[in-house]
Image 1 (tube, one colour):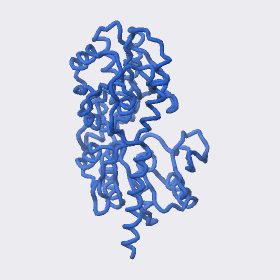
Image 2 (image 1 turned 90 degrees about the vertical axis):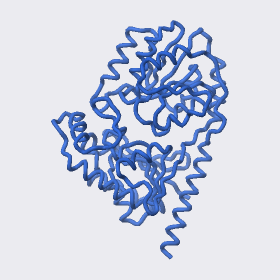
Image 3 (image 1 turned 45 degrees about the horizontal axis):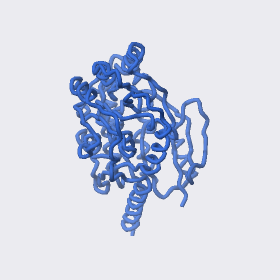
Image 4 (image 1 turned 135 degrees about the horizontal axis):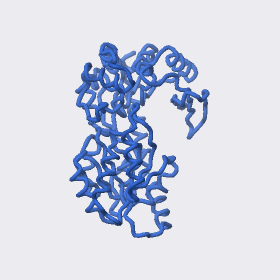
Length: 381
């Protein structure tokens, strides 16, 4: 069986093809960015068509449509290809990807007038036209109705799309929750090996693993750490610090706190190969999200390594409520976060017992593919 993947690179790159783990990966230079990338266009259509002509796939699994738009699903369906879609975030119902309003609040569901004003302010125009946004939702809904299966790592994402009026359980596309797999044993073993080499300086180190943007809640967390006033605790923030749709307030605020307080320490992004190294230097992981995380992969990786986790009680993170190693805090509640941070103690705890491996997830996805192909065969007969 031949497997190929098509992904974007940055605008300055040339098309690159590489083999990794038995998969042929084609990286296409990103053709558009900003508002012009919401629905794709002739150039991205041509890139997709060329890839399909080259690979000749029997089935296509779509993981994200940013830069392609719902029109990519139109192309796949026009060729009669079986299509599986995994929803990883809210991009189809929100051009900003997380239903995170420019005024820094979470939207329950898209509203054309509100979305137009939000998107306009995000991109420096007085107001974005409402009609294209309405058409975008209608197009996405129609396109999703024609796919064979829709999956998501948590029910949160399916529910958000259904609130927006999108059919995530059409005639054939039975919406299914498919939690992401983690190589827990390998990650835990390497983290433990590196942890044994770590000198004990008496500090309690809490880590944030991810980007510093408003919806992630890193700035309110940093303020809570400062307010907790613990001389023995530091917050290690690992991740990119870039403006979010032109908004750099979260980055500016976190960097200012780091200059003023030694308990806030900033680190650049790290490659996946260094994840065990980073986790080995921490005594706990914090996921203070203000938006509805679809899954919370970082929290689950931390639990696989025996690290305690503090997380917002929101979205896919709320599903960790049954794990005794997880403390859930109301998102954005400054007092509650200060209190939780003051109670943090140093020490490993029992790793989360039942974590699906990447191999187990792969087997489950393969069964979905087989079921889809069989249904197509039976319908054709």
